[in-house]
Length: 378
Image (cartoon, rainbow, N blue to C red; front, side, top):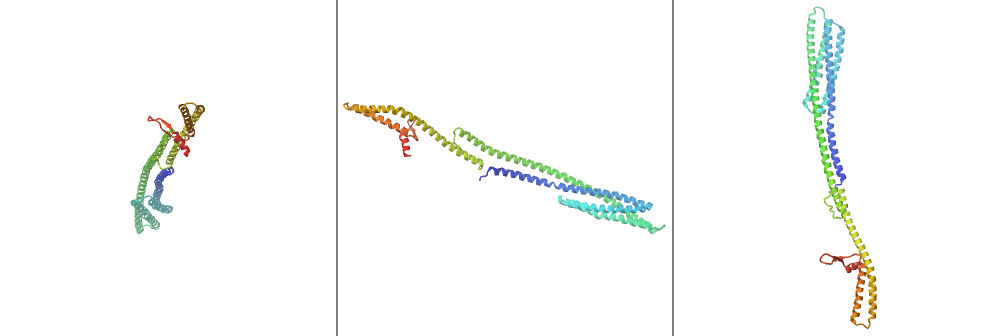
């Protein structure tokens, strides 16, 4: 299966991007910390409201004491004003706790945490509100009874004593409940802070793991990929060196099926073309050398050969009265000169010399008949 280099690089890049996306998804989970921060903010506002309620209640108790001793009407007004603020603060606390429960459902699946918040909300909206109303109602009843009491009015005094006891119980329970609520909020805050620390530690571990994993993967991928490319290029370089030294044998197999494989095939084709070109060049040089030799031989042999042939012909015509033996010798001279003349003609006709072994020791010579016949056949 052919896979080009570009898709390989893109695939590696895509894998690294996928790992980074996974990393960002893990980091995105840390957005819960923002939600937890809002929970802590709401819990802090609840705690500040509870502290303010406690301070206002102390002022309210002070006004009740002042009224019981001095019978000042402005103490009743201040008591009612502070009670109205406390009631609004209790509503605010209830609202913030509802927000904490809603945010808590987004970041935790712990049933115990949800149960604690539900119990806390119930303590504020039900118990704290009821105690506050009992305390306010008791003081109002006490103030009305005390204002209308006549001297030595025993039933009214008993009623005031009962109301004072009821108000005292409500006061004690109200203060104790505020303290318990503050402790519960402190406990919730500590749990949230511990959760944040745990999440941050986990995020650090995951971050380190992912960074190490991504780095190792990138290093391994880069090493393997670069090694595969450099090995192929090294082989091509060595083959180019062999070709440069005149060794045209080149094996294109074993290369990857990509652009480097195409380059290896191109090298193979180039080696074949160079080999053919070199053979043609050698053949051309050989033919050129043969041509120069033939020209020299023709020039150096044909001139004296013509003189020898002419003189032999002259002798042949002049030997009419001479013995046949002498005439036969002259004819042999003419035949051999003709033979030499045919050899020079064959030399001129050589275009594709055919070399054959001449002796058993390995000496070679050109077959003039075959070389000239091949030319004639072509």
